[in-house]
Image 1 (cartoon, rainbow, N blue to C red):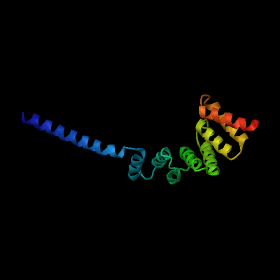
Image 2: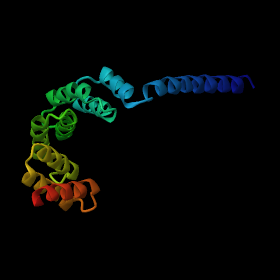
Image 3: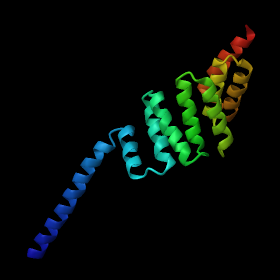
Length: 166
C-alpha cells in the first residue's frame, strides 16, 4: 500500500511539473514574434529562425522591422531563397521596388523550385509599379502557367493588359 501511494505521488509530481512547463510555453507560443524570438535566443546561429521572425513581422505589416531579420538569415545562409523572397516582400511593402525586384530575382535563381507562382506574381507587381508593363505581363503569365487558378495573378494580368490596350 505504501509503495502504491509513493508511485501515485511521483506520478502527480511529474504531471504537475509537465503541466507547469506547458503553461509557461503557452506564453512563448502566444504569437510568432514571441515564439521565434525565443528560438533565436536558443539557436542564434541558424538562418531559419531569423527568417521566420521576419515573417512574423511581415504578417503584422511591420516591413521595416522585418528587414534586419531577413538580412541576418542571409548572413547565415546566403542561398536561402525564402529569405530573399521574404526580403523582397518587405521591400515591396515599403515601395522600394528596385530592391524588391533584386531580391525576388535572387530568390528565383537561388531556389530549386523556379515554379514558385507567388514569386512571379510579386515580381510582376513590382515591374508594373515601375511602369514596366510588358515585363509585368510576362511575370503574371509565368505565375498563371505555374498555377492556373492563382486569382491574384489572373487579376493582375487583366489589369496589366488593360494598360497595354490603352
